[in-house]
Image 1 (tube, rainbow, N blue to C red):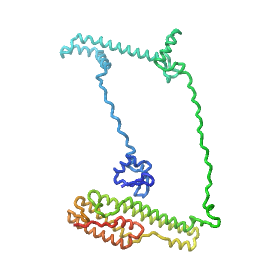
Image 2: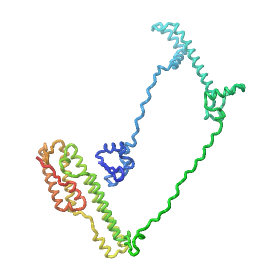
Image 3: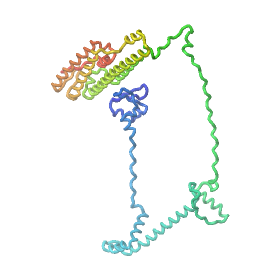
Image 4: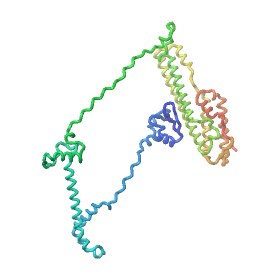
Length: 414
């Protein structure tokens, strides 16, 4: 499961990697989104996830290559190949000798080929000369350098100059030589944009000015006092508890032991994954609690020596309200998680070999039915013991676990 923050304040849970990849392709998940990293219990950018990298680096398929043209329709190449063929006297002699044997064309037709080859070469030469003459008769292109060689132009009479210039203009260009050599007109200067005047500064009234003059507000506690240390200590525990509550909501284990969560067509698998995430969030929360206690106890010892706190301040620290879990509740909640996971593992093993009814379950294997019966009674006794020990009134993982179970019970075997 992947918990993704699409935008600040909007979170979405994707069950599988395919769902996450589809959301990335649709654009629901973009570079501004973040994903929750369970190992470190932190939000990181979605661009670091392998699914996003794989989709971001995908390129569109290359265009298919253009189909090869039929060389048989190249008339001039065919004529050239015939010319080259006929240029070899040995080949021509072999053709004249092989014609009678193969029943080919008569010798008169063979002798007419040199005339056709000469005609094709004459046409190609005339076309080449016409192209060269047309290229040199036009004006020079604008990108040609000043040092390029210019072919000599025959002298013409002054009377023919207008017609020549008109011919050049109409065939090769839309402007005369004088227009091309003229300098471009300078662009009109851009008028500067008018900037808005700066807004005047507004003086805000302070809280001391609003309060009556006869009363004085209490001075806030500084960071070097025991009150400020206790405030930071309480805020750290509240933050760890809020992260635990957010993780429990992600797991979505409401009515965890209901029959709809134990179906063999994927319901039991999803429930077991949610239970694994639930247990991981509880483990991280308890580690953070121990870390907070150790760090703030060290801070208290250092600050008490440096600031030389009086006995009243020391007593205030030692009598602070500590969010503790009793060892009995910790043991019961751990055993309850293990027992429920064992039941789900058995149902996963027997997938397709059991049927669920109205509060009942029937196994095809008798041995599996007996094992399920023992596990069901064990889990039921753990739930009752945890509630009797005050798990519902406690603040922490045990209370969230009992809320996830709710009033549901494992179905009875038949």
